[in-house]
Image 1 (spheres, rainbow, N blue to C red):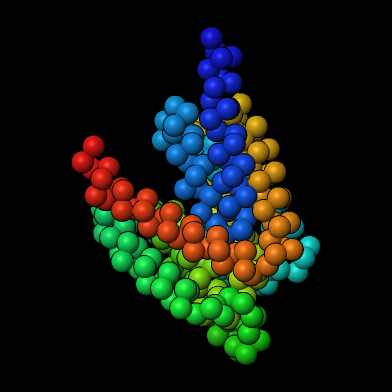
Image 2 (image 1 turned 90 degrees about the vertical axis):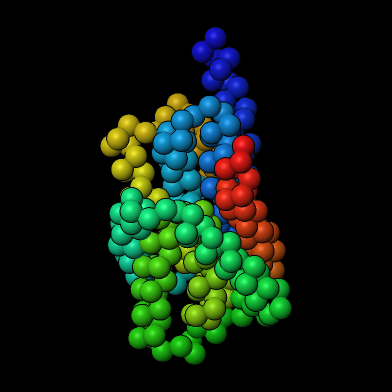
Length: 261
């Protein structure tokens, strides 16, 4: 009976985690696929979040290694953003205890169409790397702001963190989408590891599900990152817009439909 239930959970979870890893390596937003899969398989929310952090951390690590080998990461900028993202995430987590998430969800629901219109109207968005035109002091300052702001969002709400980081790096730091995505992986990896430690210390990771899920996530991330290295900015742009649309409808569902069910 236990074995049947275990296999049923894996059949539901593993394909979703593979797809989530694939999408996450290209544009971010894999959690929009993986977390519902864990919950659909019967994991309680906190265990779903903890086990997802376990599998996604390993997947992101392998994507990061691939991008680093292919010189698609500005390590100094990514590390500065990571440091401030951890600070922002801490304050975001504290703030969520006092403020209803519906406020931020409504704001994001308003911002996503604006970002999508901006990207669709600017066909050269993220196609070229012009970061050398920005002074080092500005880059360091903007990297700190990006980490602090997106880190706060991640701690307060979470979904789509990687997408917004890619957008920030491309718009304000003038990186192309390849390097923006690579930088984002460093930030995601650091925040994932910190969150994973917290979940594991509190016993919220189910290892006999998390380990095979991690393998599926690694395979998805490796495949996605290899394709991204070959196809580059156009592929990231496509997945970026698609994931934004998915995030938009998810939040729309959470606010207006889920509450009615």
